Amino acid sequence: MKLGTLLMPLHPPQKPLTESLDEDTEFVVRAEQLGFTEAWCGNHVTLRWEPIAANDLFMANLIARTSKIKLGIGVSVLPQHHPANVAVRIATLDQLSHGRVYWGFGQGGVPTDWELFGLPPDPKVLGQMTAEAHDIVLQLWTEEPPYHFDGNFWQIHVTGVNAEQGIGYVPKPYQQPHPPIGMTLISGPSKGGTIGGAKGYIPLSTNLVHRTTVAEHWTNYCKGAADAGRPEPDREIWRVSRSIFVGRSTDEALDFAINSAFGASIDYLIYLLRSADMLPLFKHDPSVPDSDVTVEYIIKHNCIVGDTKECIRQLEQLWETTGGFGTLLMIKHDHDDADKWNRCLNYLAEDIMPKIPSV
Image (cartoon, rainbow, N blue to C red; front, side, top):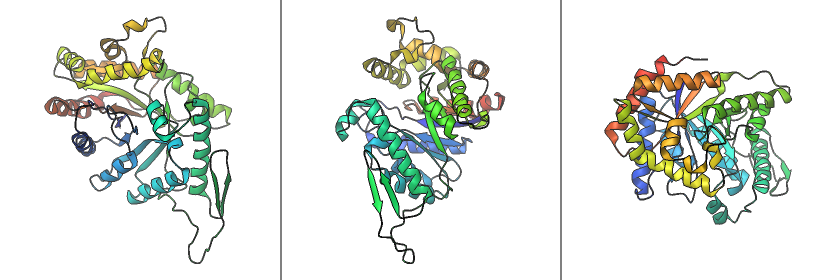
């Protein structure tokens, strides 16, 4: 199994932004040295707990600091941008990195972001905007001018083309026809899974849900592929995210996970999902009362926490429940204790991952 990371990222709101960005930059550099194969980065504008508001700029900052690790945009929130701007920025990032970019897209889920950009708080409308913007981005990446697109939200008409002088041409990505595209999967019967399977996009399973729900992601993804007449997908392309902390002992690891920024970030996520009436996502059983969904509950059911032996056991359990996947994405939490986190990364990369099977 390959090892990667997903930076939501997660930092206490009181931490200075510069410190958070420096820490996340250094983490990706260190991750590459330890053999991590990819790093995905989220994008939220009005959340201090998740403070990277321009993930393409953050990834551009990493191009010259790294040489091999793939850099994943996870995701471009398409309703917040003109799709032509997304197309040229991601194409430029792919060119600068010589083809080390993955691209993910989504509609976003933060109400204060919607307010900031004057977007309708209707997920259906945002979904329609996302689908239309996605089509425009792919058209600009794969077609030559003149460009024409008559949408409900965006219209593009580029007619003043001069081929000899190169006028009217949009930059294309380094990777052809475009960077590999990822889709985030959250609920079991995820619409993203069906769409991703139909289009052959990379499935990215969230860290928020129980392993039994993660297993549903692959079933739904394969159904989308079958319904679209695509061949059976290879599990190698599947990415599964987990919050992970490895300690010297399981008791030490649990104590740290509960009483550090790791636990505080989970408490924040509980607050966020409760506010959005999405708390059932965390549950391993729908009958679990909302009041039982605590930091300790989520660490027990949805995280990988313990000493090396215990973490290997939990990862093998995840593997058996899901049937196997290609890449484990470690969620990047705040490194409030640098020594413990550096030791955790070493344990994970050097002592644990070599013992986990591959598809």
